[in-house]
Amino acid sequence: MVSLTLSAILPQLRPPPCPTQENCQEASSLQLWVLYLSLFLLSAGAGGLRPNVITFAADQFDMTKSEVESRSWNFFNWYFYTMGLSTLISVTVLVYVQDNVGWGLGFGIPAIVMAFSTLVYILGTPLYKKVKPGGAHWWLDRAAILTEDDAKETNFPNLWRLATVHRVEELKSIIRVLPIWGSGILLIASHANQGTFGILQARSMDRSLFHSHSFQIPPASMSIFSILTVLVGLVLYDRLFVCPLLVADVFMSVGHMEFLYDQSPESMRSSAVALYWIAIAAGQYMGTLMVSLVHKYTGKDRNWLPDRNLNRGRLENYFWLATGVQVINLMYYVVCAWFYTYKPLEEAIEINNEGDVELGSGDGTSKALSDANGNVELAVTK
Image 1: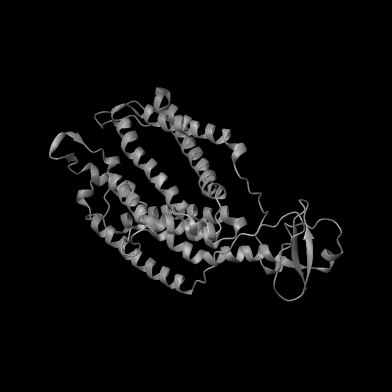
Image 2: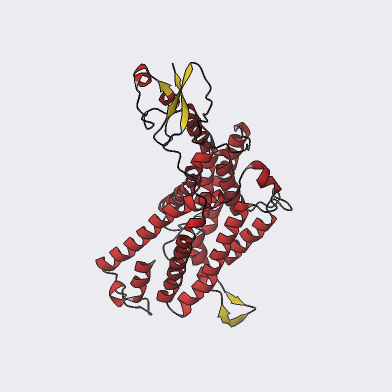
């Protein structure tokens, strides 16, 4: 955010203004490199933060079945509700600042807020409940087989090569959710272009309020209506009605995240939640691919998505295409949900350092493995 703010403030890091929109000076290689580096750092930071912040926050509460059912509030609802409020502020207050004051202050405000939030997080470190990582998990049944050479070893086993039955089952539970997880990719693919086509459509609309031209809604703020719909849907989620509402963002955000969190093993919830953001990223790329293919193959005379003026295109045909894709995606999701076997929400049982072991199933005998931290688990001997 700091480098992005500097690129908007310093004249050396941005091309000169071009009010006439004619014969404008292009950005130099240095200016583009600074911009791309800033965007890369933002993406890298978001990639490290988003999959972990929700599981870390959930670890601060008792998420066992009895406690969750006794609470009158839903943690995931509140998480996405605060995200919706922050997005609402960004598309209203920050967009107004960027349009009427300047891009430097518009980027500077979130940079200051992010620095303040980082400081608050660091100061609260002693108060957090920290769950120790459970190690690597990428094995199948073969990885849990204890060979004769492994049985002869007296030192700590290499748990990167020899896995326990419990960890193998953890990976299997992640694999089982992948078909339903994949249905979210196509949903995001159709939703991905809302921020681009929505702004382009808004630029050609009459955005004045109550037929008064003294104030017009900025094009970038038109998404406020979809955000308000999501916020209202979050309030109604699990309260009044769910099925008749049909608000895709509410189901995709809260429902998808809850599904991945509840159906994943306790020690792999950060990895499972990361799948949610991977689905969003894959959906964004797939949405871009859809736009490129439609633009390329819908003809030059009457292109659905023209380069300059959307009024000369057939944007409604693209939306009908996206609707057809979602119909197919819905049928795929229903089939996956029909055959999926849900994991019961059981009370979490932690493996402690007092000699508790995890019971594995299957043929053969079992041998207790103790790692360097003193955790005891089982492997199967064939």
